[in-house]
Image 1 (cartoon, rainbow, N blue to C red):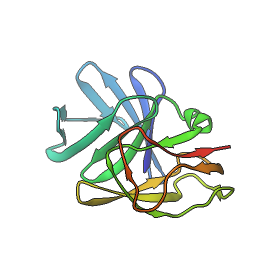
Image 2 (tube, rainbow, N blue to C red):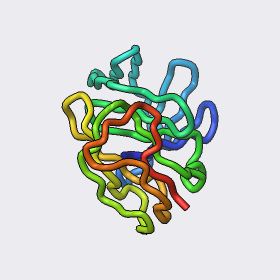
Image 3 (cartoon, rainbow, N blue to C red):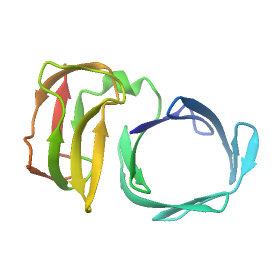
Amino acid sequence: MREIYQYGDSNTKIQVNDTIYDIEVNGEIITVDGKEIDVNLSDDKLTIEGNTFNIDFIEEGDPSTVIINGMLYLVSKESSIYSLVKEIKTPMNGKIIKILVNEGDWVNIDQILLELEAMKMQNQIRSPRKGTIKSIKIVKNQSVNLGDILLTFE
């Protein structure tokens, strides 16, 4: 899971791994770290500088989730939202195949919490924040639906 932070309507910071990119949107012109880039977004594809990425799923909300070329991203309007996250919800219908934490465990940002099989792919659900797991609402091999609560934080 990678974080995308937005600090206003036209200025955005995106963090991928340990690198933060400054994004500016001015009408249809998008600038990344001072360089103008060509971006085209349709219902199921994102094209950046001629490279096309498949958008498999988008969940609206704040934070919301997006799967681009099979990788799960967490998107929010600002980074402080992560300290407010009290529960992790299922980003799509699927089946829980691994639970890697227990109630009472301390977790770090980006730590893998569980694995969800959906659309014949294994998706790692990572922690969007540091904190203690309060409760786990699912069990291994359980089928889950979009929006089901998987676990909660204290």
